[in-house]
Length: 375
Image (cartoon, rainbow, N blue to C red; front, side):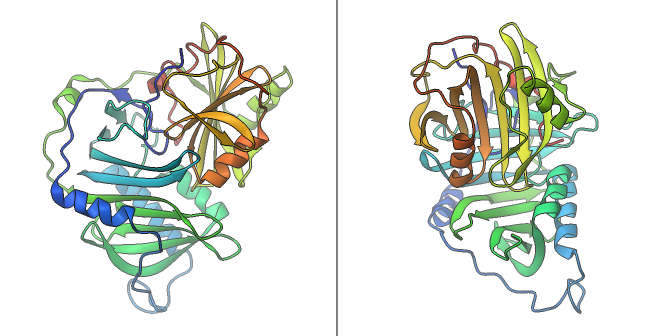
């Protein structure tokens, strides 16, 4: 039986706990305003001036994003987040309450329509591992952004009722790929809008309510949960070498994914039903985590919606997509546009018809113990 996956937007993989969420009326009004917003929000342009006056220094946008990634680790904050995005199964919206302090993040979602599990989860910043970041900003992903996009400081604006610095990401052809609002006081990301190559808004993540500094206590259950001591997954020192070695013995693993997503980290785990491989691909903005194990898929996996993508039938639950092909089961966790997801599905092996349940019962059973794909 396919296990439930505790997923919210980017593959945040953590330890499940029990908690409660409270969404206030002002927050809901703000959510309605954001969900209905389809065009790029107006900003106060920098007009050729830097933060301190004069011309904007070269690389200022990328440096601001780097500072924001660090701030997401160091700052203490709590608030209500909205995630609204397009997916291969249609528009999806989720509201979550988030609490972060001292290397611990507690998240509680109030909407089960976008995730396979409505239970809250805890994630830890353990050792030298990077935290999950805020709206996809971590040191690793910022470094990837610098290789694929041009970051430009564009002036100031407001997000969650707070003054913010605005940084745009442009593709090499000059088109707008994303816009970030960074809290002017703390540098913590407050909002992120992502656009596809046709300038359509495909996802929007934003705090609709946030506070910094003194926080209310974390959910009681979080205090009873100890940080994980280790992982059942072994990280590959050279991800490309792991892919090559497995392909030589019959696996069908891509060295890169469509949409310009290079492989940047990999891990594998040995279970009672065989080896499971986790491959992560990203350009810093779009992130795809691909789990692969030998086996075939049940005709109608419980809790999953069947849709057409890339000319093939797949099953979707939130941001997770599963299918089987060539004797393997593929589970894709995607924070990417429907266009990219469809291209990825089309590029990977597909069965002409669903098979029967084979060795996939335990392949992803303990995703909470996986190596953090964003370290």
